[in-house]
Image (cartoon, helix red, strand yellow):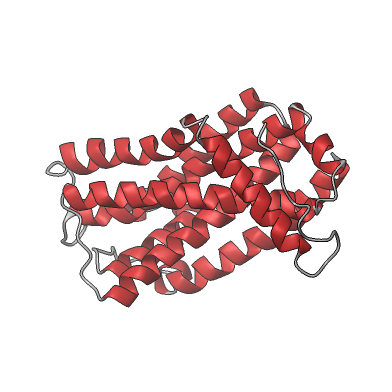
Length: 272
């Protein structure tokens, strides 16, 4: 177990919470050196989709209207980093609960809020590294942004905001389910359902009419459309409020996810 050092800041002091959060985030990152499988789990799924769908079948799939399919696909692949982060984060939380680490934290003068925030911040750093690798591979196989630097950075900011919201979804799942085996199954279902019931890989116009509204209001669709717009990649024009205002829907849905998942996670942690 990594040594936890938080004694340099008096408990309850104005910077105690920040110091606890930094110490716990550092502990998680140090632990990652001995468990690289978590990083591979986050990176491999987007890379497989990028190479299998975006590269091997790029000439077999056309974008409605016009446009390069690899550039159309890239925002959908980037979002996979966030969805793939849910399972490893949930399993990490569940393993900490099962291994008695939470009881150890409770015996120390450590902010309980800092425990979960430190977990999500360290996982956000890991996911950001994974996102960087995926985007570099995307550049290597043909993806190109066509807007200015600020707009491109804005697209990455949207992706990272989505990743952070998904990490809190993972924390809540880990605290509620507590079984790595069950979490693994639930995480796979969430990854597949939210990916394919969206415009990540294909236009929602091709879905059956009864399921199309669900795909249009899927937060993944709004995030993907926002990134395609910010990166200057092909966007399939849709109808309805989510298609006309993807940035607003993205901000609203991510804010709601965080407003629900953060307090519920803190409550579940206090009762665990």
